Image (cartoon, rainbow, N blue to C red):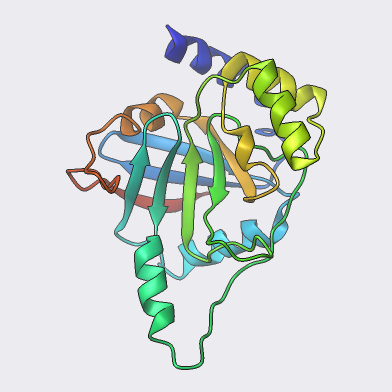
Length: 211
């Protein structure tokens, strides 16, 4: 019932789905996921559009899946760490964060992964979708106090009705959201994984631009 309700909500009230310029298609064996990229996070939008153009996400995998949290894909944390550790110059390319109150960790949000760098800058080739869990007034109040932030009426209403991961707000950049195929994302979020959150069977995705 919750899935049906969420799908109904997404079809009727995705405020950001319209008026934005670019869209992406994640094609998987489970079905298609269509995403709108936010014009108000232009650097991250340009980053992933260029990555698609350059084939960086060719044969990409969803390689970290946690039900009720995220479905993550692209370059894995451990692979990034291994590659950067081997660089004698210690180069660690990142993209500075783009925080906007319209871009928050609601169900279906598309974000950029990162490590614990103090700038909260994003990895260049790692993305995640928010699957989320129920959120209460108490949760939001505690987060506001802990993080020194104030959730907008729009954010609060969305979180209380549909859940998400508000604890990640203003720590990780959100730069898009699902506008079609949320059911596919939720299905992927429930696959069996090992103790490191790798899916037991590979879940590949093909990423293309919707013209």
